Image (tube, rainbow over all chains, first blue to last red; front, side):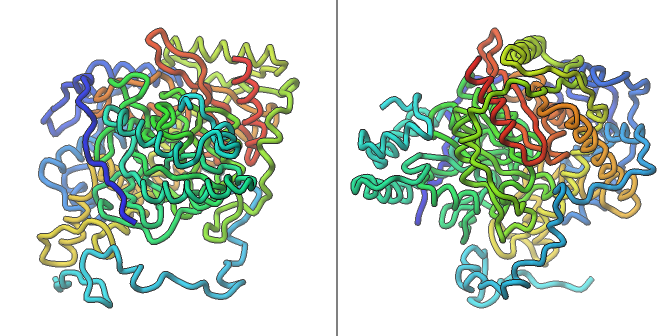
Length: 161
Length: 477
């Protein structure tokens, strides 16, 4: 059944001007964290939890080369501008993640299963218990494909490197 | 019939008693959507034909004098991350701009079996990644209570639709706070059930160990009605709990006198907006007046929740979003000469900036050499976060906190700073990490008339207590 896809943007409403942080610097620095207002907020929230971190300089954990490598793993073809932005963002985020090193987890088990008191993994799969379920009819399964030959999905050829 | 006064019960009653018809109700909502939604941006897709057909079916039952199912004739909205058969579902992303699912999300199917009428799909942050609904590939959502501000995210469309009476209720999803935080920003009720309470089948996956489906409604009772309808084991989701579903509505009115309510100091530290702080303090006083015992507790690993969350969620997302490659559905980049190029260009062009950032972060923390330092470490600290709650729940029956450190911020205020945006989730992510249920209920407003939300957290599968406390507060406030 057809549906109306609303793509109309809302009537223009005055919204706050975005922070003037169109910094083109590739190396993050102390003021990076969103400009004056956001920065002090983060510091406030941080203070709230425990002592303020002494050193605020970022280590360059992630270089442009790392970003290129990770992008390849993730099958993402980033533009030049995106790569630069990504280096900055990843570094600032990963730096914040460093606080996990404060925690002693030597004798802690990783939490692999969330479900408490149950063991869904131990339950026999329904298709094992009940027999194979009918799968989607072929035509329905192909209905959303960008390109097919009627039987298979068609994609550009794989070129051996 | 005033749309602002409708709850699930009153809408159903009106249709049952023939004071109106389901078709008229649906038409009224569409008229309101046409008039008010251009300024808000809550809806992405309307399914008028389906809705009117479904409403007509309900009217036939009512005309025969037959008892309507529990949500008979009630107009609802569904967050676009949940698939709806035959109705375009985009997850807020361009990469699914043309995707028409061949199957229904279980939670949606259950609502429809209970008579609900789906008006359409509502807007959200792309792949549920965001805290402000500014990451939607289509357009941002504006908070109906103050159009210059965000509705919260990622279920911003769901919260805004309910707050603006563009639906009686909505389904949203919560991975780091995405039901509760927008509920608090828009002044509505938002419930995140225990992990596994509601099937995730048909929820386009973001982070499989953190995703939850839950209702956004005007009242706590409506949330209980929806939970009772959508909860329960689903053979299509092996993580759905094989536990009986209590009658959450029947349990709602039980008195709260004698319940022990925990207040964790870590949630009331610096950085919490002063007006939010006083509103929550007043709410705690109210609960004490109702006979609850207020117990100070500590959840010492709270300060690690954000880094743990963003490592685990992005890692899981990088795996879950690998399927979007232009082969079988959705957007495909047109200029690729090889398969690998097609994958890379489709994904780079189809995904928005925040999604790409999270995929990159997730891929990095899972990559060889970093897995132990980040992902494994985060999983261990997650155990400690969950343990904090387990310990606390030995002394208390529920925990009360602010839902968000601030009320709704202005559109554009945090878009350039991903980390500042992440910190908006500081009070909600812990529940997702521990898998416990949580609700946000309206708790007053600031001087600028912005809604404030009170969050109530409970033990695994103890939504009954969470709802009871929420209901008692709602009645007394």
